[in-house]
Image (tube, rainbow, N blue to C red; front, top):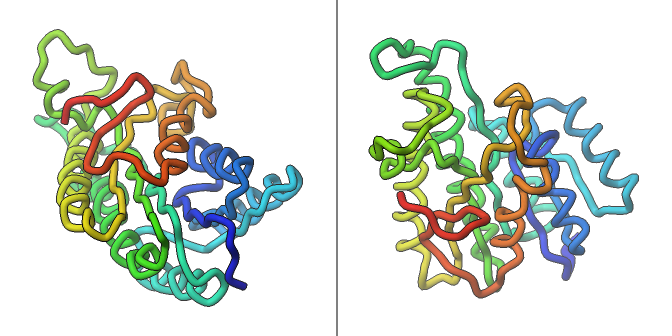
Length: 241
């Protein structure tokens, strides 16, 4: 049923930074919708957060499957009537991805399908729900690896040189900027976040940050009702595109 509590949808929320983002927003009093493509893992995540007395709900959502995206939007409309925040967190790496001279095209395509096209598809489907909020926000979870300025800097030491992954995050920057301009008059803030090198499955848990540290800037932007739009941020502040 419709609620006065703030409502957030987080994609890829069954683990990692997405799960921690949901936990922190839940602790702030929000209703959190856990988007996940695996029902077993999604319901397990829901149970974990409910055990912490948080208002969490699993939503079946595969960002690469149009049918699950439309079904998720219909479910949210029916049960909650609106969204106050969308966190586009779901993302992958691919074993066929690699340096620009050798990256497998199929691997690059798979990464782009999830990390970029999936974000566009989910965001477009959820916009009618976000437009029902008094002050909605969209946060696209990006990466410092998507910064063209950093990649072009010979003094910047990148841990990964992955054509597909880096390109998907760079494309996400353009989507963020264009959507922010388009939605500015509708009081829908759109920003990108670099969570930093966080220990997650995507890097085989080699990151030096905790999940809470990785989620911190995402959560900060989600909680701001009158915050910036069209920016690229990390915990230290704005970063170059």
